[in-house]
Image (tube, rainbow, N blue to C red):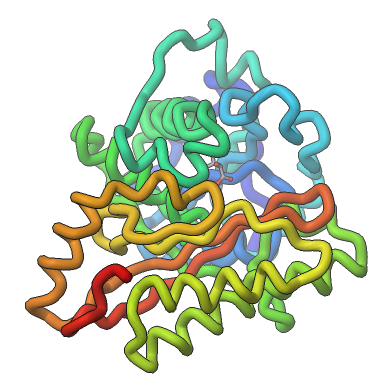
Length: 313
Ligand code: PAF
């Protein structure tokens, strides 16, 4: 039988509640509006530590003016109820002043990984994520923190600054959870109308097409084209970018849309040359598109053949 987690708001309440927990801690950070994807993070967290701590906070510093900070769904009661079905121990749901008692002037820049793709479209986003994640790490001191693979670039950014700043925490990725129609779960899916929801399926279809092309051993740029052509053909969908990155270090290997200009030819050549000895490269295809007024992202791993003529055309 699971029970409702203890709910804290202020730093003092959080510190007091943490002092009662003996053993290891797993952290799951969220902005609320919890769905099955978040609950899967909590479930996996339970297997990795004695206690699970969940944060629920719509973090203002990761939203730029004009983005959906005000509209972002805030559903604390429903979130607490959902968490009681999976059994987290403690929730920290701070107000903005609990999280930021003074306006933060520090900026954490994880470097190139934070400047391409989402970082190019949303230039202040990852600094805001890095700030709030660092705060939570310092206040909660988890042994392990779990993040969804759905935000693959966010995960890469977090891994980078956690490594560079020697933060004593293990970062654990959790696979994307999808609905039966293939759409990756996201709190923003609730913005979609019924018709838009049907168009939103094109994102996972684009990924499937790219993976099918890769399985045939076609070159990198053809894998990319297989995905972009699905999005371009879909009415009601405006692609922002389709990109393929090296899954180990997030080097951008190929891009279409706004990502095309961000590919650094030297880095791409180096990554492909290194992979040529193996004959293949563990990569990740990422896409972002507007479906109506809602911007959606999706991604999946993909193995790219780099044998022989699989270089750039
Ligand atoms: O992925 C999210 O929901 C947010 O970016 C995070 C990690 C909770 C930080 O606000």
